[in-house]
Image 1 (cartoon, rainbow, N blue to C red):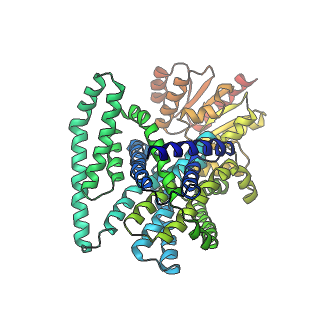
Image 2: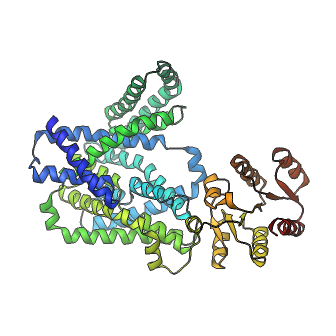
Image 3: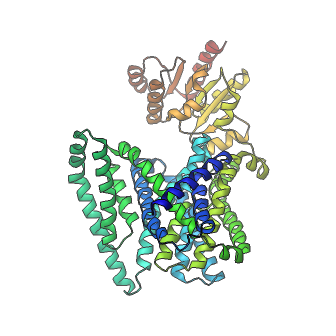
Amino acid sequence: MLEIIVLTIFIATIMNLVLTRFHIPTIIGYISTGIIITYMLQLSHATDSENLHIIAEFGIVFLMFTIGLEFSIKHLIKMRHEVFLFGSLQVGLSMLTFFLLAHYAFNIPIKSSIIVAAALALSSTAIVLKVLNSNRDISKEYGQRSLGILIFQDIMVVPILLMITIFSKDDLSLGSLLGETLLSAVTLFIVLWAFGKFILEPFLNEVVKSNSDEIFIGSVLFLVMGASVLAHSLGFSYSLGALIAGMIIAETRYKHQVEADLIPFRDLLLGIFFVTVGMQIDFSVVKEYYLIILGLLLFFTVVKMAIIFLLLSRVAIKRVALKTSLALFQLGEFGLVIFELASAKDLVSPVVSQVLIVTIILSMILTPFVLRNISSLADLLSKEKELDLTRMQKEQIKHHVVVLGYGRLGRRICEKLEQRGVEYIAIESNIFNVKEGQKDGKHVIFGNAGKKSILESSNIRDALAIIVAFDNSEKIHLVCDSLKSMQLDIPVTIKVNKFVEKEALKKEFPNFKIVVGTEQVARGMVDSILMCELT
């Protein structure tokens, strides 16, 4: 066993050193390692591979735990449209399409077809977010749209895991099965919730007082694995218990430290999981069904892109909808997890599992290349122009005016700036205003002006002036807080509707210029201020 582990680590290290030079994710390196171990060293039937599978299962446990840690109710509320509206529609329509294909075109049983459809509806959260962050595209509109849909897909993990558990029990009637599952689920949630409510915080407080890193890490490992074993004893997967444990710990003050300590365990064990995926690839099946695999890859790509594009094209400019669909065209790593669990419970046949696993792997290999060339691909597929934060950064725009808000007043200010030949960037969170402005060739970008990352990306520190042109007093206050915390040495002008608002803002933000009055009066006053500051 020790020799197999040492050999696996060595091959994985060499493979990933080579693949990372071509910007290929390490997941592919681990899968390739599994293939090499199985076929070149002929270990496909070695008893030691079974031990690797047992270890690898905990890779999924820690993956689900870290997903639970990132589950934030506040974050979901802020992104509710992207997450729950577009995310649910994308997953629902994709599942329906893939279910019909699996059941009626390939005669796969109904339960298996539902599992297959659910797995294929998901995209690769790990690869997409990693590349978007490295490209600094996560703050773009298409990056935010992609993030919202990915969050919903992660949430869908819970019902999919429950579905696998329910479908795997054939000895009970549907009513008895649902009742038993509901009772077990309620028991699991109550036990873990009670532990998190009354015991977890005092327990972690005592652990921290020990001032021992190994005790802290050991206690966290106990919490993760204990919740997993509890879930498994109640008939659920280990992963579901880990997910709930992550959600509970996310509500404590130790969330970030726990996440930092467990990431090495997660990545290492996930690596072993993907090695075991590679070990199970049967190239005789691939050789026999390679045309079907390529056909399915093309079909899945077209269907997922079409669904996402059609959903978003009504609320975003077509180029943004296209780039979002390109970002999420692939099948995800959790599909591999689902097929692993489903195959173990005889819900999906080995041949179907093999074909779909290889299809998923091929789509994941293509993903980094697509994401790194997404603007060029969008140029080929769409002639519509897109003004975004990254282009502004590349141009290193300076001595410009940042206009926060592109309503009626914001439009008028931008028109006056154009008449005076002054560069500007307008930031607006209403997509319809953004689309209208961009169609007219205006320098309007989509984003939440209350976020420092959006403000920073517009080169705000090199601006001549900042004008806040919102009508919403709550939004004005939020933006002013962000501007004040950035400690900018730049004139800031704010338009408000009432003298009461002016006095309240003046006390809190004495360095900002506050303009009060009707839009007509405010436009004239802002225009006179610009004439003084920009000459």
